[in-house]
Length: 89
Image 1 (cartoon, rainbow, N blue to C red):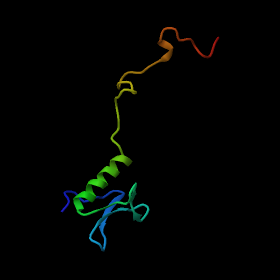
Image 2: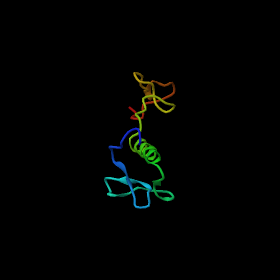
Image 3: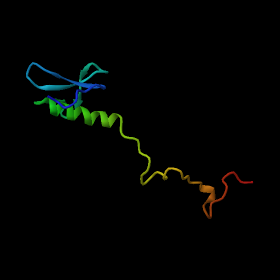
Image 4: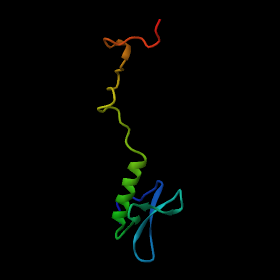
């Protein structure tokens, strides 16, 4: 048995050929990947695919990174040397 049952947009169903098909609840259709319908031989593989899909749809929020200012700091371009007010005056 899978360690956690899916409960979001995606679920899996056991099809007549004994494959675990990832099901899109919103579209009410099998989930398609680059190679066709996402189908696996075990429920654990289907759950792992569902977790990857859910992470893609709802990624963890990013608070810092190479293109983000650290929290608590802000960048003001007018404070930089050589920067002039674009409004003129």
